[in-house]
Length: 143
Image (tube, rainbow, N blue to C red; front, side, top):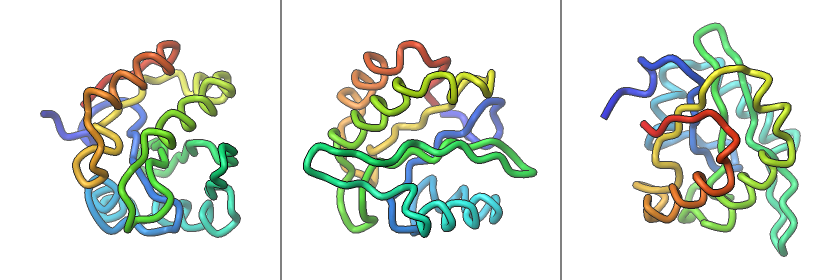
C-alpha cells in the first residue's frame, strides 16, 4: 500500500473531535505537519467539529491547506477513547454531499485511507460501501 503523504491529492485524515492526534494516521500527519495540528486544535476549540448526537450532526469534514499539503480532517469518532462509528461515517458523507461545491472547489482527488478501520475498529468493506454509495460524486482514490 502506498504512503498517503507521497501521493498527489488531498490527504484524508481520520480524526476525533477533542483535539487529540495521538495515534495512527492522525499522529503521522501531526508529526509531519505541525501547522495542520495547530489548525485542528483551533477547529476543535471553536466547536466547529463538535458532534451532537440524537441524530443531529453539527460538523463537517474540514479542508485545511498548509504550506506542505492540503488535508481533509474527517471525523470518525467523537472521542479518541471510543471506537469509530458507522453512523458518524454516514453523517460526514451526508454533510459532504450537502456541501458538494465546497469539496469540489479544490479540483483534486481525495486520498481516502481506511477511515475508521484499524484503530477505529470498523470493517473496511462496510466503510467502503458507505463511501462508494454516498460519495460517488467525489473524485477519490483509496490508499
